[in-house]
Length: 197
Image 1: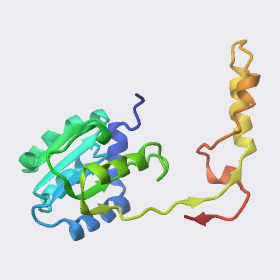
Image 2: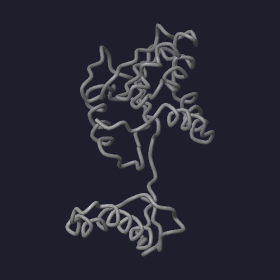
Image 3: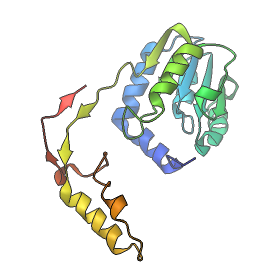
């Protein structure tokens, strides 16, 4: 299993004011007193603690990364330790004693289509949520721009080819151009207009 986020990454996500304020505004609107709340991708538990502070009866906070171990102390320090249960692991492998009224999730990685996210959400809908459950976020918007960035690709290929220590990499390097990768927008040439899905 590869670590996706460090603790500093989780802190940076919470420090993103627009992201955090949007989540909190939705939580204030949707959490009803006594609700059972499920949070997928809780990190160290910030939104789980907030849900309890906003009146949730109980919060189940699930996270596969080590940061989840910090959650119980955070909940206790904020006076909600008895109402938040932190569960390390993947939601698809966890059973809850009751179905949730509200789902909070943020498992996007680099994209709303991040591997495993959709299957985890479908599983949660089928096994962990009440039929009338509310979900935060209600929807995602994905903006797509097909682009090419040969200069960025060439630099990486040249670097690997120069440092291959005598290993013939032609068959590998021929496949490098396939697929997607993160690059700076200024390094890319759009092939078509951006669309929102």
